[in-house]
Image (tube, rainbow, N blue to C red):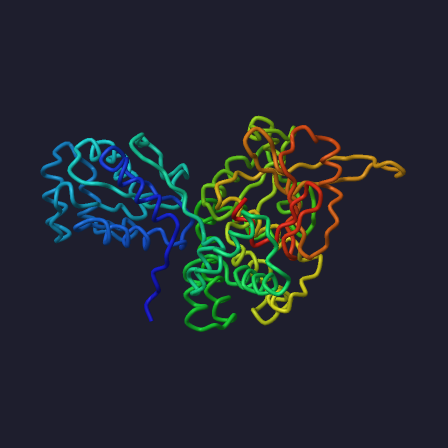
Length: 450
């Protein structure tokens, strides 16, 4: 069976670009490999244009690639391009897709002149777009409008598995602060745990729909992880980048306040690996969360960029990577999550999925750590706000629990310290929505609505 074409939220953003900016800019869709960039772009071209031409630079003929060496004569360029591909384009009614454009930097540079020419619309897709070798000696066009594409969020996942109306109920509960009831919440948490295990990669979701076998799904995810690690080895032949990537679950499980480079690569210092971490970030396979030194609106102004945590961009891949050295049948996260018995030492799975959903919803990721000495306690205690988001001119601290446990000491101490800055406090956990004074306790599957 062929892979299914899934409904994605980015499609509406592409429509907005076509309406307001096509002809003035090219659209660049950037994201990790295997998240469906090429599929959604071709579907968009098929639906929204009379015809289209795709150049896949990962395997395009040399004769096509060589056309971009000299585009001074655009009439000759377009005649040659149509002749070599066998596709006749219609001015004003056709779109040209540069798929995996990072493999042909000159094609990306040509966008400036192609857009100015105005005959056709242009969409580029790519991963590892900003890696140094992919932009070396070219002029990055200013005529690009970028869209970041992410793995499926929970709502998209529900669409994919045939439960599209379900999220409407979740949204209503969130917007009206109305509990769903324990029975409904349990059903929603079952679906959310399924989302965590399958993940948001189209191939994994397709495997679930076809086989409904976690062993098959896990094999698909392992193949994607191997692809990512091969990419990182090409970026960094020393193997440090792939080692850093593989260590993410282990580092989160240590429950430290930051990623400890020295514990992963002996004697390594962050100052010497700055470019390597930027390349890992450019792969779009991970999400970085930076420590806020002074939590307030304008997080980036007070971020400690030497203090950060890393999460996988897709939690389904995270679950597989955590047990990459064993086979599927020894992956205890599957069994524990399916039975709703995830122990505290695996709570970082929920932290990863919250990071994923906040990032997909458009939030940059920041956290805050601090020490306070509560009254009656002999020594200062360490507290951590897992995530911070902005609301107008205020901030919202977020604490994540992997269970229904309602304790929120970090939120309470943060309130005492920064009460004038806070709009609302959130506790994300596994139970039904409830309000406790000014704290909104939300079931974790509502994260994407924040």
